[in-house]
Image (cartoon, helix red, strand yellow):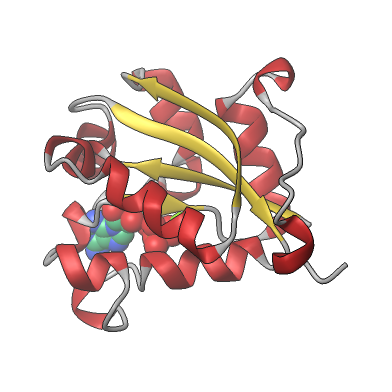
Length: 150
Ligand SMILES: Nc1ncnc2c1ncn2[C@@H]1O[C@H](COP(=O)(O)OP(=O)(O)O)[C@@H](O)[C@H]1O
Ligand SMILES: [Mg+2]
């Protein structure tokens, strides 16, 4: 079972796409673990995007993610990392697969609506950065056995 942080970034929130993102992840079969609507602080933004520090788009990225509230969530499931990144689509919306969120709703890499963790290890790290342990809900659904093979 893998976990991923998912953010509906400020553009997604402003455009009323929180429900669309949640709906697609639910429909995929993924299980929600935690959710928090939050105005991102400068400090959290810099920690979250530390890996991109020094890149030409870094300052714009920090400005973007702190510009308005985001919907932060943790989702889990088998192959959650690959499945969620596929549902989001490639980083550049014009390279995102048809049917993915970034393909269907976005045009520019700097306004690409969502964030998803890129590995199981980073998923665990990012979920721990954005949520306290007591905010993570351990639960099961009756339908899990029809979605999760194990
Ligand atoms: N060349 C770029 N110009 C502007 N923003 C960028 C660029 N590359 C990446 N970004 C922004 O930084 C975020 C983080 O980059 P990255 O981790 O490579 O993509 P992803 O969000 O798909 O994992 C992207 O989602 C996008 O919002
Ligand atoms: Mg990334």
